[in-house]
Length: 112
Image (cartoon, rainbow, N blue to C red; front, side):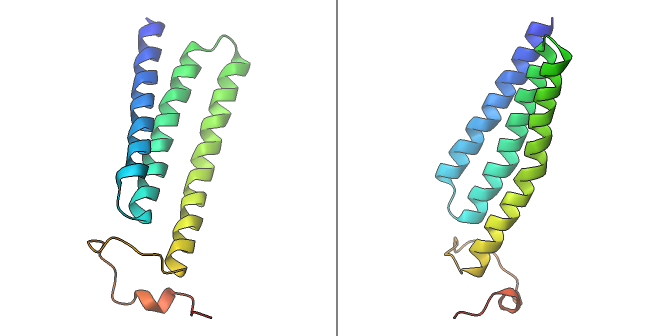
């Protein structure tokens, strides 16, 4: 029974990782790509880690998978925030369909 449950988690995790990869390739601007990579990638890795924890032979292996998951949960939002902030401040081109606030220029770094 644990084989079936862990297999389902592993397949679902692989699917979400694949969706993240396709999103990084197919989406139009950096903000959408960043969203796909962080959200779907983190969910995919989380599901894979749950599958590993279900099939773990020892408590050490379970703790290792948990540590990997917690590190990803802690680091993915920070990395995405820093990338988004750098893209915003350097005025990277975005998709014309992306909506922006009218006061957005108040937060940009002046060009040197």
